[in-house]
Length: 171
Image (cartoon, rainbow, N blue to C red):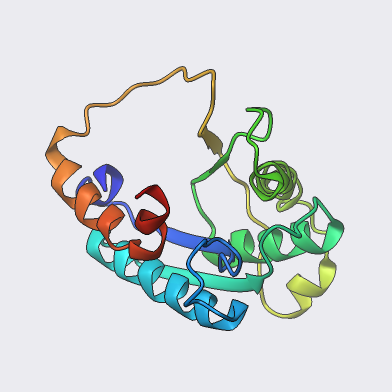
C-alpha cells in the first residue's frame, strides 16, 4: 500500500489458490475453496490498488522448488519487468513448505531472468530478459528495514479483512 501511495505499480503473482487451507467442512471441495480464496485475494488486492493479479492455480501444500516453478516465475518477471520483487524468506523456518519453496524459487528466478539462454522460448514469444535490481524478503526472522505504515494502515486492515475464509481459522 505504501509503494502504491508513492506511485509505484504493483503486480502480484499468486502461486497457489489455497485449495486446502481450511478447517471449515462446508468447503467440501478444493475447487470450491480455491474459488473463494481467489475472490478474497482479488478483493484484497483491489482494495490496496494492485495493478494486476496473476493466479497460477498450482495446488497448495504440494509445491517444491522445481524447474517448472522457476519457469513460471521467470516468465512473470519477464512479462512485468519489475524493478524490485518481494518474496517470502526461504530461510525463516516457516512451517509451510510452500512458503519456503516459493521463496527459494523466486530468488533463483530473479537471478536467472536476465539470462537469454534460460528459457529462450520466452524470447521467441516476444518477451525480453529482465534484470531484477532488488529482491526484498518478507516474513523473515532477520528484518533489516522498518517503515512507518501508519498512512496506509486502514487500507491494509481493509485488505486483510477480505480474507474471510482465513479469518475464521483464527476463531
